[in-house]
Length: 378
Image (cartoon, rainbow, N blue to C red):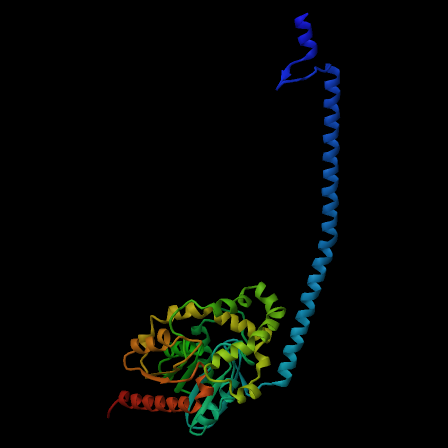
């Protein structure tokens, strides 16, 4: 009897009595539970399928819409570039040099002076400042648009300073110029140095203004470089890069002139619209990306320069650190001249054109004196 009651009543857990169930009922409940789980699994699968259908229903239109927006942006930016070129046509002539359609101006008469501009600018950087007119009184002045800037083309290639230096070298040969004073400004100092190293008999003396000579980490370089990335950069420079560049341009210009104000002649006469064209944005981005590696390579050859070198810079340059760049180069180049312009920033040829012109005259006389010392005696 005791065993029968135990079997009928089941066991006691935690003070409660659990009544045993027949086996058929347990099996029935298990079947119900399996059925419930299958139904839930089916509902989850159907829900996932519906979600996938919903996603696929909007992904296609979203991709089409994005492509349409990018296409419209490319058309708009291309039209604005053409409008800028219509408003500011070429001011010089053209040469074909190493596959580059090279835009240049040739003014005045006398001993030649060649001016090489920096990143983001063009020939007008020197004409608007008044430096070309000032020098043309006594010199033949040649200014090139570097490849990709202004109206010079930039074929797909690795445009290091050494590669770019070949273009004015060959261009000057076509113009019948065998020797010249060469001034490079900002990024153009790298090209000027490369030209002097590669063609030392062509460069009678070298003037380096507001230059960059030694590699450093710079946030502005990182921000400027993305349009240089193949494929992605091509999309960027025809879509989002031009409006971003237009928004950033006023601040960029102010910083280049600080602590001096931006002069009125620059505001009114410099063709700023040409700077933000897709073609020029590519050149600027590539030069920004190459700047530190180029300085890293060239710094080992500065002492190979054989001509007179004159370094001129604004004491308050906000773009190129004077101590790390110009002062250091002057210390390493024994016999180099150094002119520090107190109160001036990076754009010394605009803010202090007379002083820069005088520096070029001084370099020209040094070059003549050196040539006379080297001339064979009879």
